[in-house]
Length: 198
Image 1 (tube, one colour):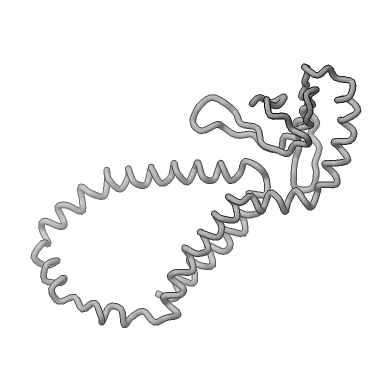
Image 2 (cartoon, helix red, strand yellow; image 1 turned 180 degrees about the horizontal axis):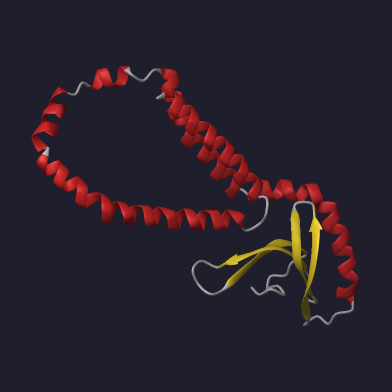
């Protein structure tokens, strides 16, 4: 039992570290949550479709054996098999996942990743501010650049005459609909939209 719990804890720790590294890129956490929801729904449906037809007949055919085992079941003896270190290990894995989700929802990996390359983004933004100064207030443009800033691959840069320079580093589906969501970093964004949409 303890070896299994240690394995689960190790897998959770490694998975969380990989997840934090991926979540440093805006948009990855949303993709992770979306696919986890899809997998959970598929798991529940598969369990209902394929599990229940086997469980119900098994329960009906072995009802008396199950009832006898429940009568002889000793809860104190069952608990005695779990010492404090084992219980701590059993609680550690869900705690790791809770911390993982909290850190990702607080956007901490994104903040750390951006802080490491902020000067590169600011230098690039200063270059695009020259073009922005020549642009009418009601105009905007988006151009492909393909530049790398540390761990971020910027595929497009948007300039908005109303204010705002937008660096797009990731795109993804907006749920299951046909729309596409753009993710990235912006300097002086305006409240009415971006060159990539609202």
